[in-house]
Image (cartoon, rainbow, N blue to C red; front, side):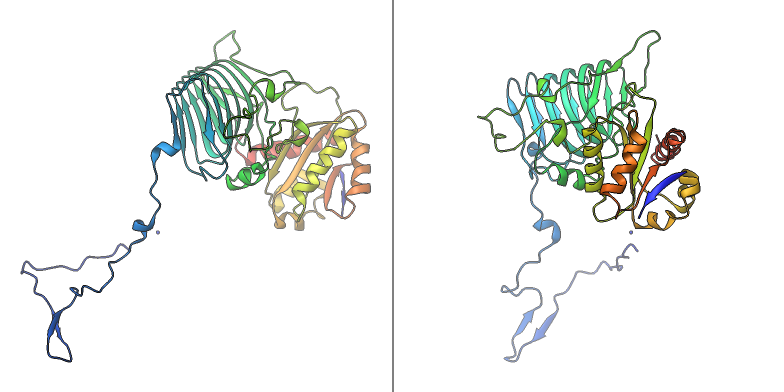
Length: 370
């Protein structure tokens, strides 16, 4: 039991084989003027004539070496992007995109802003990158260090020496780019890797050391580059995506489920809760943002469901798993002291809190197809 605080295709007309005749109309002066031949008539304008011409080169980086390159905010605006055959480059894509493919690159440092669809690395070697996307996949890659935010399960195929850490990054437009890409900062499966081609007795991937700092892998843009105006931060406390422990071993057996129900400040409240709990020494294990139906509420929250059903109609819920000795009582106190006017669910006691965590996150993983 938990506690809660308040698309007719247009048929073409058939035409005969007669030579078309010109239709005329009598004017007031008796002169016949052929219709459609008035030189004063403006030419027709079609929507496709008004489209801005797209230069494919604006959406590609190809065969570059020893350069700092990329795109500034507002340059992609959700288009597809291609990076290929680059060597020893620093690449910064400070914008959101539809999909990004990276082929045949060697010894590059890469930052990719939020990607609505997939990020696909192929035949790459010695890459260090920060990536946020819906789907992440590699094929025939070697030695990659990836700071990742991925809504679905990341997949590696015929790849070796892959190391993963939690996404840590900030620049002023990044939050908007996440929204434009349709990504939730709370849905991050960075450590839940699926190796499509495992080799018996070998491990093709591992997790980066927990204290790994992004700037030690992907440096900030040089002060002389065109990206110097982008105010970035790799400080974990400022990261748009909450820093989670993921699949690493927990230091404590006690966990607490803390759920925020939809409201005007749900995201801000969840971030504040994370700050409050981590400041007290507790660890954020995982987060999820999902929609629920009444039957989901009853299955997940059980005895506390009746008072929560009406709240899931207002939008998705945001759930946090926090861990540490004494975390349940500490979370209940924080809920009472800071979120008394907000609808939340908090595990009631440490004996049932693990069940709360399992019930919610198992449901969330099934809901998201994980």
